[in-house]
Structure formats: C-alpha cells, structure tokens
Image (cartoon, rainbow, N blue to C red; front, side):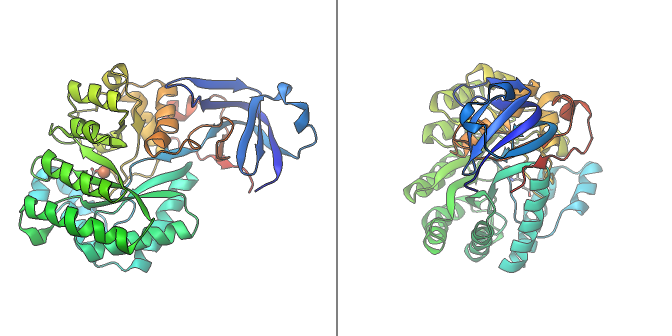
Length: 402
Ligand code: NIG
Ligand code: FE
C-alpha cells in the first residue's frame, strides 16, 4: 500500500471539506493522488502537480469518486431474526407491547446467548461483507444482545476476532441495551451490575477492544440517572459514551449526552430544543436513524433541520439490528435523510461520511482531503444525485484495486 498512484479519468469527485461543518467540494474532471494508502492531493486532473507526472495511473473509468460511507451505529452481532414479530407489528401490535410480552429484544437475547463465538464471527463476516459491497468502509458495532456477562463477553470476543481479521470497526459495549430477564424488572440493580461488575470485567477480559460504551435511556428501560452512572463507570474505564436517547419518548437523553460530553446521542426522535442546544454547545454528534423510524412505522422523524439550525453536526446511521431496522443499505438511509429528514443531498452525504466519522473520532475517515484513508468509492452514474433520485435502484460502488 506504500506505492504512489494517481486516480484519473473521473467524471468528478465529491467530498466533504473536513475543515468546515457543511461544505462539500465538487470537482469536475478530478484526479486524486495517493501514497501509502492515504490521499495526498485532490484537484482537477489538469492541475495535477508535476511531481506526480511519473506516478502509475489508475483509470477511474469516468466514474464519480467519493469517500466511503461510515456507519456510526450498528448492532452488528445477534443471533436469529425477528421476522415473526414483524408480521405481528404489521397487524397492529406495537413494538413496546411485544417487548412487554417478553418478545422483542429479549427474543434476540435468547438466540444470541445460544450462539458460540465462532458462529457470531461467521454472522459478523457475512454482514460486514454486505455493508462493504454497498460502500460502508468503517462501522461502529455494539454488543447488547447478551444482557449478561458471559454472553456480552462472547460478543466482545467475536468483535475482537473480526478486527483481528482486518475489518475496520469500532466496538461499543452495550450490556445496558435492555433490562436483563434475570433482574425481574429491577432496573436499579441491573444498572448497578452493569456499572460495577460487567463493564469493568469486559474491559479487563478484552483490553483495547472497545472504545465506546452505550446505554438505552428510555421510559421503562434505564432512567437518565441510571444512564449517567453507567456512562460514568465506562468513562472511568477509558470508554467514551454514546447514548440511545429520546427514541420512543423524551427522557432527557440528549441533555445527559451533553452533560457527559458523550461522542454521540442517537435516535433523538423526541429530542427537546434544549437538548439540541446542549448537544451543539458540548460538541455531541446527533446520530439520526431514519431507517428505524420507517421500520417501526412511526411518523416522528427526528428534527434534523432544527438540529442543524441549533448548530449540530448531524450524522446518519443504519441502526442495523433485528428488531427496529434490519437494514445494511447506506443508500436507503441516504434517501430517507433527503426525503424524510429534509436534508439536502450534500448534507445527507456529509452526515454519512464526515460527521459519522467525527462521531467516532476518526479525522482520517469520511472525506478525501490530504491525510484521509484512501477508501475511495467509484460510482458509475452521470450525476451523484441519481443515487437518491432513482429510489430503490441497487447501486453498488466499485473500489480501487488494492
Ligand atoms: O436501536 N433501542 C434499542 N435498541 C435497538 C432496537 C433493538 C431491537 O429491537 O432489537 C434500536 O432501535
Ligand atoms: Fe440502536
């Protein structure tokens, strides 16, 4: 990967500008100079510096080049699926009602607890390949379908193995994804077990694997106060919080994320105006998951425009999981970002690249300015806007040869 090469013959190149919140460079007839797996120069092919005259060429075939997508919120590893429950929901039973009956997340927990590390790794690889062929070059992946120490530990071990195999992913510990059946609804005791026993033990057993911790702050799950204690326990272990916040009702999750200087607050369909301001001031990235709103049949789209007006750098993600969004397709999310969250194409693209990477603290992902990882996607379309416009078209990007 150390060789120098120049990507030429591009119809154009589109990349967010990492020095600005929402600026996008659109360069017709572009070229991209690469060295050591990194971008070193971008511009119009006609302006390529003389120093690159002799470098080997890679023919872009007249495609549009963009940075790869970054997905900052997935529940990548779980056993089974919930297609049976899905049909019940289509027939009027609510997500919360199914959960109250012991289904929902708990059903996935039963299937995940029964899976070995090797089975989880196989599932993970197949899903990572599916993300990759759709243009996702890096993603965040949560534990959370174990809900007890040993199963959470197997999930963490499976993520460690996927990283060892070369997959580009950040791991988030989410043993507080729901109330564990063993605690009989005692959220307080469950939160204590997560904060005092499970998180420290997971970090001790799997040093250096997880960068983030997460908690589902929601009515009937963990309160903001319990979420605070779980996140603070994670912070004491060197983990950076991300929070499932204000998804089904307002619970002060965005405000909590700001108070803790979390990397992100995610979902936010019921975020308050004060929460938006607080996130902007504390540099918390709102990670919006419109696929979940769609799949849950809700109409409460997260107020993305208001967040941008409040000064937030909004990111978009799939929320890939078996219950509320079994979707690995970044184009579906890009389309929902434009069509339902009312983002412009450039904003939605920036939210799925630069700001997604920012929420994961990766300054070298999500753009193609000098220093960026050379994760370039090549799209065979006349105009990039077609990726959204031809709704349902299963575009697949091409990648640079290794
Ligand atoms: O992000 N909110 C909690 N977790 C998931 C849903 C999990 C499930 O239904 O399996 C989410 O929407
Ligand atoms: Fe989620």
